[in-house]
Length: 124
Image (tube, rainbow, N blue to C red):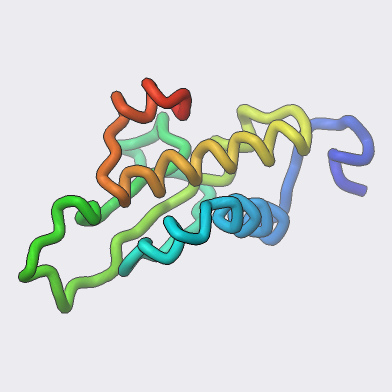
């Protein structure tokens, strides 16, 4: 039985969490999703030690900074950290919301939107 059925401390398997990430990515408007280029989304349990307080991390060259010579490079990476996100969540609904906010936040970085602007837009 899962936590969403019992009201117990929230625990999600890697597979359940990855499904939440997929659902969050599906909520990105189609016209924006089509513009995402050369980026992969990964789920990891914990962030690296030098970024221990983050829920997600974007690594790469934002679309707004890619010039005419941008080619032949490895994909950008969006990393979502499962366990820190789950530690913030008491319910299934909390997890759905936190995953969505984290996905939107990191995808926004791919589009060149910085943390200050995300905060202004209410996505921090």
